Amino acid sequence: MGIDFDYEFHVHRRDARRFLTAVAELCHPQKSRWTNVVLPDGTSVRLPGTHGFTSGKTVELPLAGPSGQSFDLSLCFPVDEPLRAYRDEQTDPAGVDRTWPDGSSRVVVGYIYLSMSDTFAILPDHWRFGFMPAVNSQSRLFLMSPSIRETFATLALSTGASLCLLDSELGGPEIIVTALGQRVSTRVPGPCLLWNPRGHTTEAFEELSSWLAGQPPDPPKWIIGPEHPQFPAVIDSLAGYARVAPHLWIGP
Image (cartoon, rainbow, N blue to C red; front, top):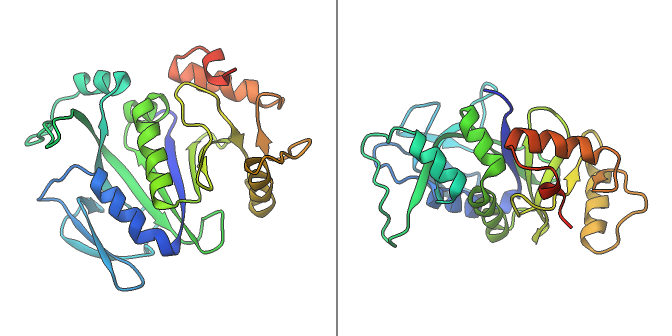
């Protein structure tokens, strides 16, 4: 597997249906693979994907059951250079049509596992949605692809998600992609703002909110920017994994 990068979304429970509806629109529309997702208010969303690799299920949110239970999705992203290279290395799944109605070319990436929880969200009354790639080549794409970063940033901004974070299994700081309706670290490669709220989520989020409002704390405690002593080591790690020069990640 190597290093896993996953995108985390923290979505208020009232916006969960709106969020899942947008996710469904990103999925490859395979008619033979679907899951009916029922929300607590009784409404439902049909996801083009399986749950536990089984199609035709009806699943109620929030998810219950053993750890690791998730949806198995194939997501489609507008082509860019990293995605084109990935596509050219893959064997097309049987029956996948890469010609879309609007004439655009998209790349199918799957499996991507979508987990959901109402117990691990950073904010009160929020659910955590996590998109984790299945293999190392997809994990690298999650970090390197401008198209994937932009797609997930747009997903967050268009559905009212309070936070979109790019995290890795190393347990270090997270890249803040969007927060409270604002773009933060959406360019790839480009300026990165890092955040480490573990164990102190309320205090860390208050600090992040102040930063977004143009009132950065001095010195910051949980926000890790270019002046923070931990920043260069994190950037070196990202640059080494992505094979992109470190200075391109720091920005002006």
